[in-house]
Length: 92
Image 1 (tube, helix red, strand yellow):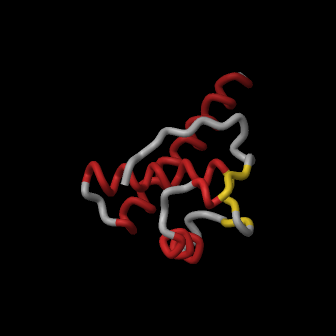
Image 2 (cartoon, rainbow, N blue to C red; image 1 turned 90 degrees about the vertical axis):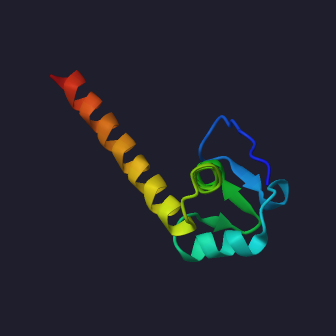
């Protein structure tokens, strides 16, 4: 599998699943686990970013699929908390 860095203007932008080089069963498993949300034949850009982060963890570091999902989720939570801290600092 080849990793490609993709930039989009909006995290809400939807990308057709046919553009991805991923097996449809893998996408279904991720959707069933609550990792991503599929909208018919497309996926939102933020879901795609999450998939590629997981694949990097899996391929480069040897993290299993479930572990990669947990790591990505925790990284997103940390980022949200850091943003919240910055916002609170600005309000002082």
